Length: 254
Ligand SMILES: Nc1ncnc2c1ncn2[C@@H]1O[C@H](COP(=O)(O)OP(=O)(O)O)[C@@H](O)[C@H]1O
Ligand SMILES: [Mg+2]
Image (cartoon, rainbow, N blue to C red; front, side, top):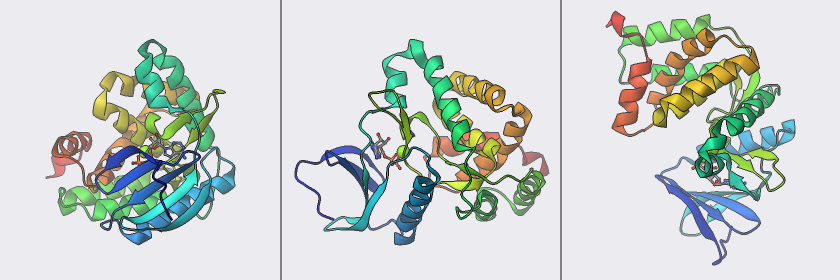
């Protein structure tokens, strides 16, 4: 893949850069990113494309000279829902309603070949250094007791991953963490992502999700400890780690 000089950088994070190429988007990873992770993201995205969920189409996966592996997708012209929410805070709740309905719509879909959420959580919990064997056992038992579902879950559903087109239609990007599993677990992840920056927004999200999805808040809450623990396995800043540890209520077994 050749990146044109006219490209503009949208975001730069630890191991990747996302470029706007005009009518396409290139997500380019540096050498520290395992190639298999890049292909996994593309495989997830192509499976999601095939379900009919509004998502950018995969165009190409290849090495970018001097950088690393890159994923080329269609560009969805528009702005993110996060930008909309920040631009006009008085409309936050209105946008939140659309956000929640979109997530519930994703959960209506199935994609039997996506990775299984339960396998992913148990793998991540098993690999945690922050918890001892007893705490990990307790969480894995809790995971085992949760009702089984096989719905498409985004895994990182937050307003920065929702693009609002000029005609108001919504599209979802960033399917790196997609799995098939329990919608309530996906909602727990979204709740945690909101709570990392704004507790009130997180609470508003949780209440609205519970009402619209007809899902008891208690079920989402049970998933929150499991999801927080699995998220600990990712490299995050120390303050986020403290926050996630606070949501894992298995410390009485220490
Ligand atoms: N296909 C796309 N069309 C339009 N904008 C996109 C597209 N893909 C990504 N973006 C923009 O780039 C940002 C980062 O891309 P994303 O895939 O979410 O990367 P990250 O994994 O770093 O969050 C998104 O928040 C969005 O603003
Ligand atoms: Mg993203």
